[in-house]
Length: 112
Image (tube, rainbow, N blue to C red; front, side, top):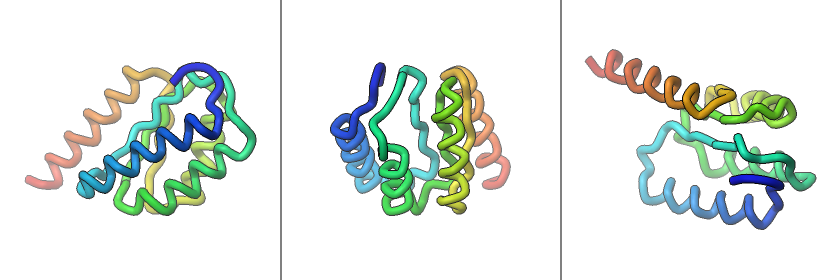
């Protein structure tokens, strides 16, 4: 996504994510790539957090990719409101990929 994130765009993205979660209930990590977002409609953060509370019960870790301090702050609010999910904020996609690699190594260690 790039530019302003309006409610319709967010709703479409979340509908696709809900379909993916229904098809793959074993998904336990999510990545929200918001690096290209320059702004968003009022209420979108609350909408996304509420959606996550309802649909992401199996998500243990979430990585939000952003350099926007407002979005990063809202990610930390999400951490408080969705305590079963550990939220990480990465400023670059490469940092998010490194976190995903770290999560995979930890999973392999715990499975061994």
